[in-house]
Amino acid sequence: MNNAKRSAWASYLIGLGLLAGLATLFAPKAEAYPPDAQAQRSPLLGALQAELDRSMKTYGAQDPAAYYIGYAVTDTQRVDVSGSNGALLDSRAVRNRYLEVSVRAGSYQLDDTHKVGERQVQSDNPVVAVPVDNDPEVLRRAAWLETDKQYRAAEEALIKIKTGKEVKVETVEGKAPDFSREQPHVSISPQVSINVDRTPWEAKVRAYTKAFRESAAIINSIVTFSAQAQNVLQVTSEGTQLQFGQVRYRLELFIQGKAPDGMDIDRYYNFDWVDPKEAPDDKAVYAAEATMRKELEGQRRTNLLEKSRRANSAAFPEHHRRHHHEEAGRAGFARLLPV
Image 1 (cartoon, rainbow, N blue to C red):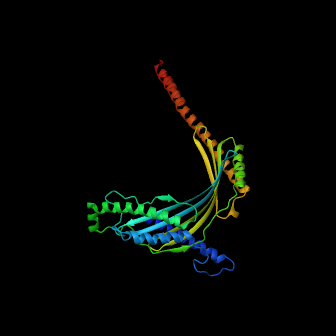
Image 2 (cartoon, one colour):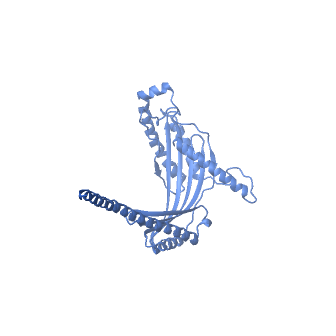
Image 3 (cartoon, rainbow, N blue to C red):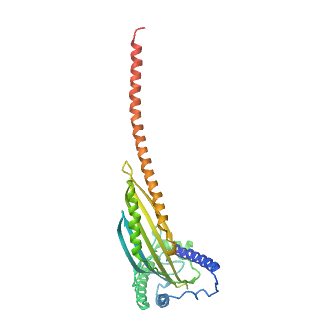
């Protein structure tokens, strides 16, 4: 995991901490608990830590040594319902889980991601799909296979880097380290999930897109409802252990029209919420639709007036040119008349 990603994780944790603090402040009959007491650790987090410990003993003893290993598992549960022009376009529920393995060989000062001259070694780590069943042994096996693959690639890259003349010069000059050493962070939050009945939303997207058909200016409309629950597990050889989840809901409205000159014009609006009780009601959605429709129709009229203005502007110079020549001809003829 590169420095930018590590900074992103840190910012995310700070945000979660602030939200948790506010929730505790205003919650009735709040009690003080140790950080991990209110959240149960996933057995998969323990499996990742066990495999990490084994991998560090194995690959940390190799030459070159793996000085840093990190595992991150992202589990996503998602529901999408879309409608278009009064009909159901799509309705699905999916679940997937991905593993990201980061292996760095060498040292914090010089590792396999070192930039040599203008060439920057690719530092982003590919993700691999893993089973969604909560089987610790299956996850450990997937982590082991990917760790070995990542270490072999890091080993090869580091050997090439160390034999480069540019690296020897940079080492003498004292360049910045390739990786920053971070303090360990431990945060265990409850895991999240969603339970969405798609049937009511299928009826809603039909109705919402059908309402757009009342305007002749709208040639296409799409409304999409999406719900997502995402859980992340992360462990690193620096001692970090993270477990957190987030639920998001979104309703997106999109309409498209054509200007008189053929240019595409469109409008977009969305609602976002995190609590199912905060979902927008039909009144709010139809009010947003009315605004979108008014804006698109107004834009179409503006384009029409602009097209008419350009047409008049193009016609005026020609009329002015003919008038000028006629006046010049009259003036010249007048000079030829006897006094």
